[in-house]
Length: 176
Image 1 (tube, helix red, strand yellow):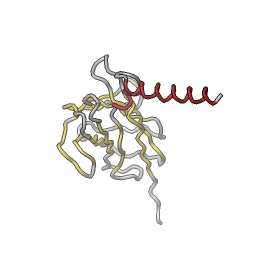
Image 2: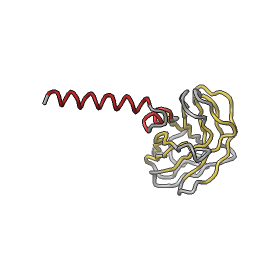
Image 3: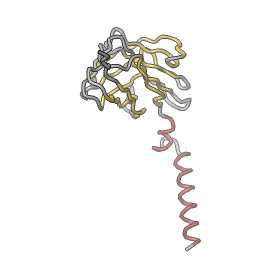
Image 4: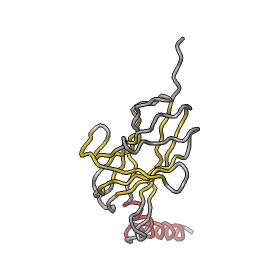
């Protein structure tokens, strides 16, 4: 019985190592996917008019360049709409902004989805922050979550889930 247990452990370890070593395997593909690093807002109270939502994504050195991202609102009592003229992107993070990048926004085929097309692809090893400007924050307080995905430019490459972005909005307390 002890030998059987040892054999099973050996097979599991070697199979796992093989999956990491095989190019194109599902596990190696996950290691190459861009990742959502952080999400933040400049104002987290309800109905604020001048907010910016920052979605920061990193592209690993082993990944393909990133050019299109889909954000789908999956929770929240109110749909949030974005101002395509005021939204933008830049290399780096919200506290270390680099080169400003042009973007265009489009409605996705799924409800409450916005497609962000970067005017230039983000090379492997870089970080990009998408700064979306809502027309206003939601009127209803609570947690608003977005599924963040990279969209492939061609049919040979897969779409990747980058993570779930979470923003929380609080009602304004009346002190009178």
